[in-house]
Image 1: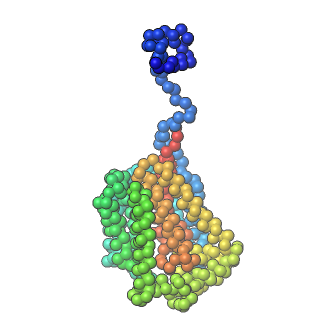
Image 2 (image 1 turned 45 degrees about the vertical axis):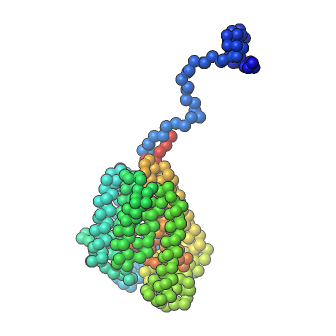
Image 3 (image 1 turned 180 degrees about the vertical axis):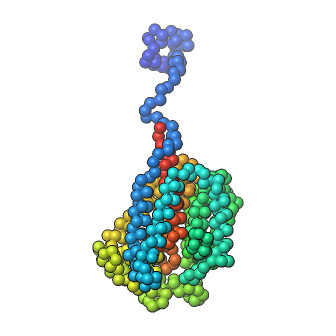
Length: 416
């Protein structure tokens, strides 16, 4: 015989005996009436899309970096500009013009509905391809690379900078519209082809490093969207070893100037009047800065470094502002990357999340490469420092991308 079950706490003793006699001394607890459960404060609330203000940390950091760049461009170029053009303010005026245009575009795009960019992504990608083709046939060559074309009204223009934004928008658009692409091998091949077209067109006239940066931007977007992220990490490591092996082969066979740069990177003082000249002068500038620098406009290496307002400007900044100034610059870029990642994580949809990630990676990765070159951490290559180095196309395009990033920051997913 089954043992008796204890009565339900709310049942009376008489009700219990009645049920026990009826069911052979086995108690069956009566069902309690169902009630509608009220939501408690501990339960998660529905997430809604809220349009708010831009990320002010991103806006402030970008503005400070651009303003610092204006100061550094003048400080590092006034001697050269005076000797070359008879006007020490030549580069300052042009940089102020580019910075002003960049601010206007950034503020416009920060208040422009980024969703309107989505259907224009393929058109933007196509324009980038067209301009890169024009560079191959009609481009101007400087420093062994053909990157510039002269456009009406605009003047000198560098399409590879525009291609960075083109690959970001295109990859984000394709992955959102066809979410299965990064999950299947045919889809990954297709996305690789989209990236490869721009990379080949950039590298064809001599933009080797810029092409590698563009490829890295595209692949990081695919890697984050794919469930096979660690496979991409392995592939990235293999690609890095492959590039290093290629440069080593060029070095030992003396097959090109990149091999020479690779050899000089290992010992810049072995050819300090040739391929190692810029690196050696950069290291002298860094060593001269000390803790607090020599002061604005007091750099000694601007008289020796070719084009000190361009790729090597970080070394001049360290010489004038010292180790403390270098740390401040690094912290500013770290803040930019951190806030950009936060914006990407809080973005309301796939397109905006991947676009924000691509913008942050494009600017952050380029800054890391430039700083690595200036400190001789990696071989010398022609990549400028975002927001700080002189260059109209780079500055305007970078600030425009930040405008899109600020716009996305307004559409964060928040608790209701």
